[in-house]
Amino acid sequence: MCDCPDFAYVAGTAVVRKEVDTAVLLCTTGVGMSMSANKIKGVRAARCCDEFDAQAARVQFDANVLCLSGEMLGENELKRIVEVWLNTAYEHRERSQRLLREIEAIEAGCDPRQVAHATGS
Image (cartoon, rainbow, N blue to C red; front, side):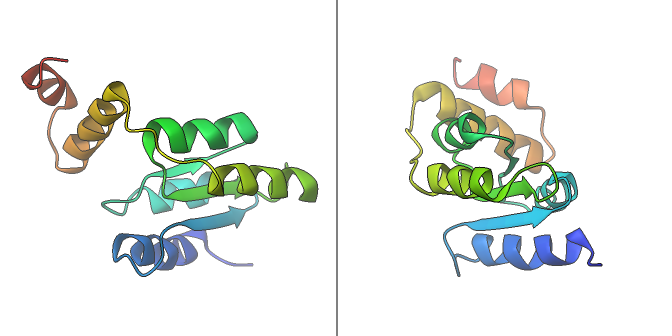
C-alpha cells in the first residue's frame, strides 16, 4: 500500500518546478491524488473519468496533472484517456483565461469574484 500524498507531492512539485511538463497520477479512485496534488500552488490536477473529462480539463483549465482511478477504469479506458489528455492543448479562450485567473486568486487567498469583476468579466 502507498500513500497518495507522497506521490502527488513528488509529481506535482516536479510540474511546478518545470522539471516535467505534466504528470499522470493513478490511485484506487483518483480522488486522493487529485486532492493532494491540488494543494500544491501552481498545480491544476483534474480527476478524469473519461475522454470528455480529459479533453475539457486541458482545453478549458490547462490542467497540468491528470488523476485517474485504477479501480474503476480498465486498461484500455486508461490508455485512451491519457492519450486524449496528452494530445489536447489549452485553447487560451477568454473565458478560460478568466477562470484560470480566478483559480490563481483562490490560491493566493483572495475572493475570485473580485478578480472577475475587476477585469470586467
